[in-house]
Image 1: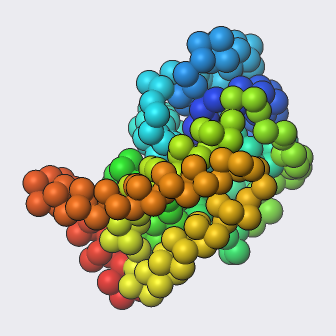
Image 2 (image 1 turned 135 degrees about the horizontal axis):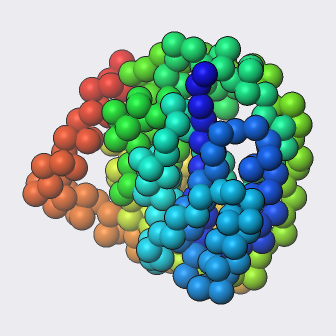
Length: 272
């Protein structure tokens, strides 16, 4: 029987996680792992408590100003003890009833499953995920799509089918800890890691990547959630871009493992 762990990487959104953990633990997956990088110790304790009460594993991740979601997910997958892993965001629709029989039928002989529509893969055979070194931990923008493209290019996949018997909509309000200023500050890391996104994109997708950069500028002005912090977000994103390309060149020159990983993506996606 194939087993599966649901992994959620979270940071500063305790109410989102607290709402989801009880359903996830009862839905029919084999294990639930929460990897929490929340800086507020009181919020982190609340998440840890609900995990203990419902049988989820709670992993405390070192809080950082950086976006560490890729590293958190990789840690969860590394420590999982199941055949497969399923990644869920802390604001995704809530899986209430998981069709384990359907999952096992679909997953046999496969390295990944997908719904036939989306671009980002959330179901991975754990061994294959680890073979490809997981999500690039030095990226923010495009990290899910870049890794998903690599998996598709190097692995065998199939359709997941009707793997959910019951799902509830998220509809979570923005939590107080997710302030406009913090969201704007995150744009710096989007800009700084942008060249890595370009290098880990297939030739056919690089035009879309460039368009995404332009749309980010436009989106900062149109996104109402940013409100008056949109100019700050735009400034920080631009500053990150200015630093990004020289820093990218320096790292390629001196970091052998960085070059090896970029080459893995480039070779795999060359014909895409």
